[in-house]
Length: 78
Image (cartoon, rainbow, N blue to C red; front, side, top):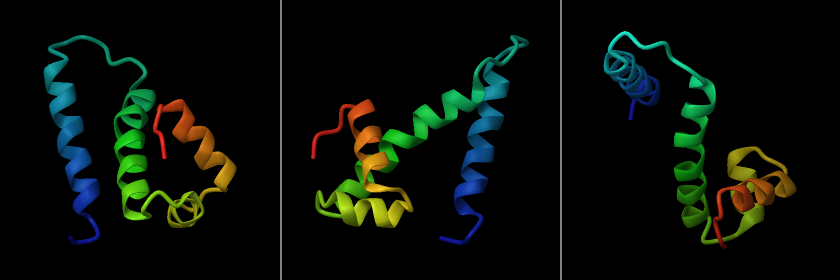
C-alpha cells in the first residue's frame, strides 16, 4: 500500500457521506469517523498481536491501560 492509500480511502468515503446527506447538515462527524474506525482497528491489532495487550499497545502507540479502556468501551474481549 502506498503511504496515501488510507487517506485516499477515507477521503473517498467522506465524499460519499457528504453526497448521501442530500442537503442535510452534517453532525458529529468527528465522533462518527472515530466510532467507525477505532473498533475495527482495535480488533485487527489485537488479532495481529495474538491477544497480547502489551504488544498491541506498543503497536498502537498507546499506554496499556488506555488500550484496556478502549477495549472495554468497545466490548472487545481478549
